[in-house]
Length: 266
Image (cartoon, rainbow, N blue to C red; front, side, top):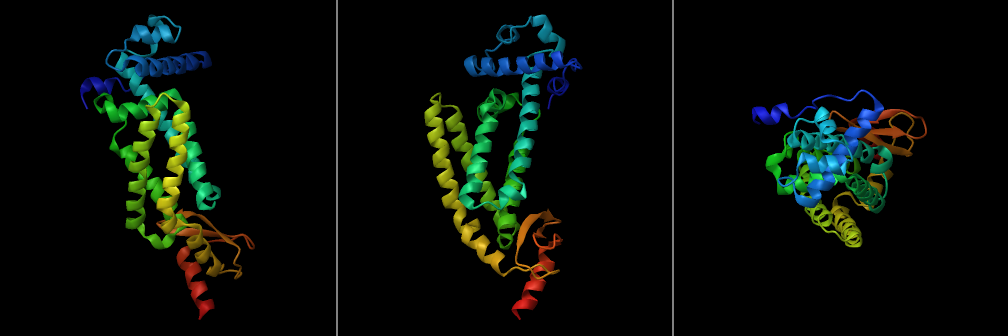
């Protein structure tokens, strides 16, 4: 990273008042529209200011140059992506039937990229990566890690390496489809591509985390405290699956639960 790109990673002046924050968001949305229309290289701060319906001097109060505007867009996208990841990793989502879980994922992806800033940042990452200052391949790896965690929660017998490999295929595959969809101006065609992506994900993941696998495992599992079979997955801790008993309300890790189940079967 050059000295120039490092210095541009911060706002010249951070807005404290709500009106100033709204002006910054309006500038970022306007920049997304201009970058989409003419491309990053051809875009100017004057065009962005005009689109945001603000004076260019007002724009310079917050951003010293175009690179700083784009970097702020990067950071906004990262914030939204982290919210997206948090939403899809809740036990309520992870424990849904496979088709419903994928539908929630796809709906959340669509909502994420409905925002112009996230849409343009995603497209630019695959078409003009040299302009990026904050986002790199590490963000893709985070997405892979998040999905791998979901896979392990649904089927703890996958193992970390297998779950990571499956997640890597899913993330890179869906990113390619999302990129093609976002670059297509036909909104209806985008929707059709999203629907096909849902079918693709379900077909690929069904052998690994299909409902029959999850149901078969859960049927023989018992709470080590009250022997109830009414248990549900409840996140993970130190690489081990955690469970919650719906009857007694106690939590326990996979190793404790498996020992109790084996004792019962014996």
